[in-house]
Amino acid sequence: MSTSPARTMVTRKSAREVAAMRVAGRIVAEVLERLGRELRPGITTAQLDAVAEELIRGVGAAPSFKGYRGFPASICVSVDDEVVHGIPGPRRLREGQVVSIDAGAIWEGYHGDGARTFALGEVAGPAHRLIETTRAALRAGIAAARPGNRIGDISAAVEDVARAGGFGIVRQYVGHGIGQRMHEEPQVPNFRQDGKGMELQPGLCLAIEPMLTLGSHEVEVRPDGWTVVTRDGLPAAHFEETIVVTENGPEVLTRC
Ligand code: MG
View 1: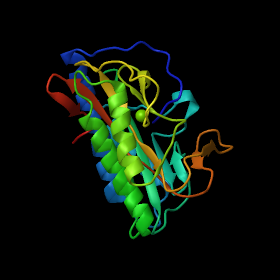
View 2: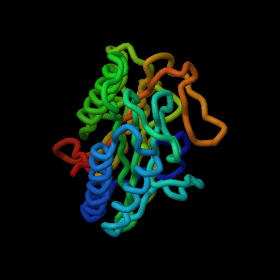
View 3: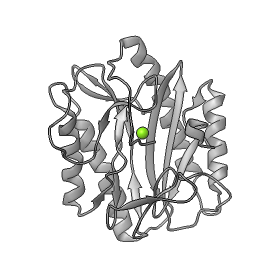
View 4: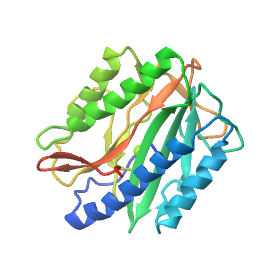
């Protein structure tokens, strides 16, 4: 899940805290991998949510999203022009759709947050390229998350990959620090800003999450108060990993 406001302090996690976040992250990764296997034409987004919640609770964790500011489900499922924060429901998925799934889990009080965009069967060429570019932008952002770099180096790395692909970069929603709260400082924009932001130090945990669009980067929120859609109705993609900055570089926590 992505954030606009964040009003907490920046914290660096101890080895004990990172260990808890590693478990939370692994649960998130397992949920996303499982949902990727469940995806098929005809399945409803509510069914995907039920699978996710059962898996998360079944291992003794709790879903981060359910009840977060009143969000009613354990995952977000955002289809085609929906960018992020889509609410699961009775809608049936169809061949050719671009399906973004975002999941969060809490283990021993610590959050993991991750997202993947899936092509449901064959999708149009540009949409396929959008998905692969968003995945590559995330990889580039993660690679920049090393000690001595700054938040702005992550942002620049993501932006460069997105721009090289010719895609729009959503500006209203950004990545974030993560730990005992799902959304902590600092914010992690997917584009350059004035100033390079804080220096990255070992123990800093971040959710890096590029949200790219096939057309214009302009987005709006549907009347349901959650679902963020592109204004031009063109597809979007979203990948997210929770990472910890270590002495040796980034470690991805949302990994099976
Ligand atoms: Mg997030």
